[in-house]
Length: 170
Length: 170
DNA sequence: CTTGATAATCTCAACGTTGAGATAAAACAG
DNA sequence: CTGTTTTATCTCAACGTTGAGATTATCAAG
Image 1 (cartoon, rainbow over the protein chains, first blue to last red):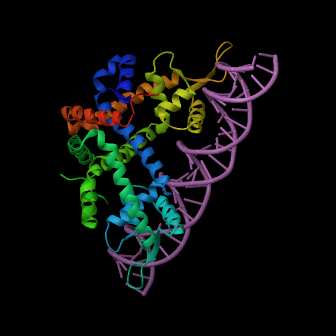
Image 2 (image 1 turned 30 degrees about the horizontal axis):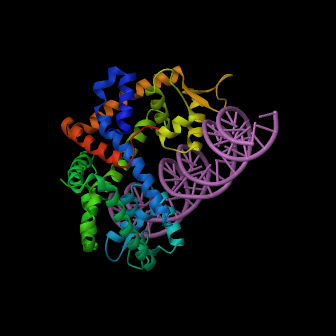
Image 3 (image 1 turned 45 degrees about the vertical axis):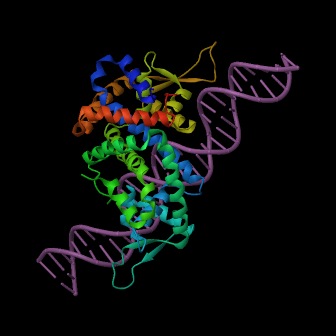
């Protein structure tokens, strides 16, 4: 069975036969770009059905998996989310209005520049429910691929991420 | 060697041991999401250094690989790009101002609703130069992975795209 | 023909992100 | 201390996309 990227490469070979030997990276990177689009759309819709923006889910899960006390400085969040500072400020503003997180400024003694973002009880509940649904959805999406092939695929993707330098969360 | 996703999964297992058996899809989909971000950033910077927006490159290459007469209806472009109509109108406006493409309305006899977007000579040159650089950059990015592992990876990614229903360009 | 439905494109306000700059606090050097 | 540099966060205008609606043209039925 062939996919959209096979079709695209086929077009290129027909139009630019001289490039044929240079097109092999597209088999991987073209598919990764394509999957990025497809998954982004899927997850965005999934989040929207639950009243959340994808960026908000990102913040919620980052805080949740960071463990007690479920609070991180804004700077840690922006590095984890790979976005700029303006985006994080904006997200936190919205999430604070929704009661999902709260800004906690350091008391006397601490660094008064940093603002810690803490999950509220409501944020905890929303995240817990979301994660359960989300993992079920992911399992469904990977169902046809099978668990064994998934493991193999994960190994190759790890190697690629490592070679691209994405080796730590911060 | 472990990557950022290994770290994330490690945090989840520590915080929510009850979820451990359900986290296996994250090994694949988490990495794909992450790679989507990383590649998007890389390609966006690469395009910006050459005075182009990523969406503009998308239009240029779609037209180029469609072959003579290097012209497609706006509707075909928006399906290929997986974006909404507003985005395509906006892109074409910008690209027309840059002299990369031109709008060609059907003459008498054709469907006068459709607007065909045609690569200009300048657009051709820009696309040709861009593709050469881009393919070299992609080969460089995949260098560490090696061509054999790339082929294997491409096969798994194809299977996933097919199972997600992404089997044709339109 | 005429009417109604469908299709292709454009318009535009709302939205989230970017990126440069502002603000304020902390760390460092003399 | 005092002045400079660095760090953490916020502000805000510009940007590209979305999504609903408007516009104009084609198609189908009567």
